[in-house]
Image 1: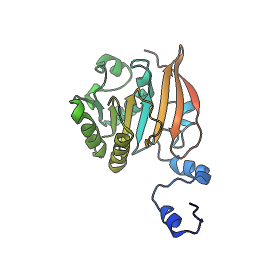
Image 2: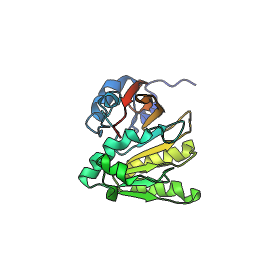
Image 3: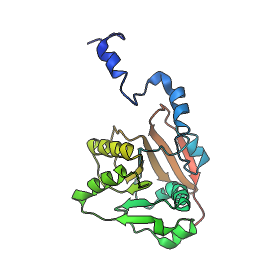
Length: 213
């Protein structure tokens, strides 16, 4: 079935809020540039249309294993939030946060809350936290997630204007998350691949050095 560009059905779709048009990449990236929160890594910021982490959105960080240094990606963000006195919620991290290491990185553990919940209630808790505008950041390790669950969490992050970051091993072919990163360890630090960034068609890779322990 073909649809002409003047077809009322097509015109109605073009009025959907947030619809991204492929020929509007430059304008979209420019519009997002002042809405991001710097990742703390200039090379990574340069790859993203928001010039940093997107606000009010869901981010997926995909890793083959836990403990390869994936938290290095969010240390500058946590440090900035800690200096502002803002709180972050951690849902089901695979290891308990190590307070001395956080303090050494300039992060006050008093602004960090760890939430444990049964698997059946975990995604519900993450969704509610993302909808709460009083929560600055949600970090979560939800295990296996479906496309539908990702969509619900993305909508919750948008509603609460909260940044949510999911760490998992999965490789969903499609995802409504605003940003998807694949992270692998190298001798020097981290290899980060941008799988998807809403508002951009580029797939970039960047090498990041680790912070000194």
